[in-house]
Amino acid sequence: MSPRGVAIPDVRERLFAAAERVLAREGPAGLTNRAVTEEADCAKGLLYNHFVDLDDFVAQLVLDRFERVAAEVAPLAGRAGQGDVRENLAGAALAMLGATGPVVAAVALSRRGVAQQVRAAWQAGAPGPDAVEDTLTRYLEAEQRLGRVRADSDCAMLALALAGTAHHLLMHGHRSADGPALVRRLVAALVAEV
Image (tube, rainbow, N blue to C red; front, side, top):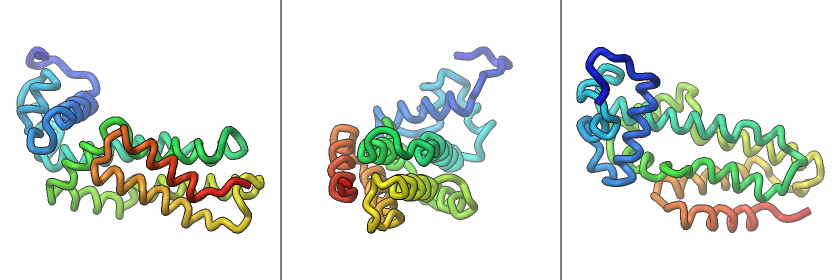
């Protein structure tokens, strides 16, 4: 355990990573302040020094992870004309699932206060599924201009279908074994070869 009074570098990320490990091992019911701080090897009160309560902590974890996904997917539109369109789309959609995405989503859904706080943050402009959908739309439109996506494709609807399906898989806890295959099947069904 960190000695008392010694600053812990990047304490938020340390607590978030610990929470993801607890969630992966024990599920939403196992997520407590004690479980997180023990997993992070830090003092029990540390979580409450940085977050109002456990719901605030979980909401900030969800928002942080969605912000990371949005940042990971953001460069996609700039890659138009490079690589395989279907693989590029699948990779972007799979970023939403991530390694711990389903367990983080499960805990968010299991706590009413978390879901409300996350929804309010998204409505206020925090990156969420809409940010990924917007990136997918811009990418598809760029590929369409290059002739790599059919001219009659409704890029916004394709992006909505792909982001919505990834979000559905995320919220319903599909594990990494199922997710990639389902996303690739969806991309193949949605995006016709030119």
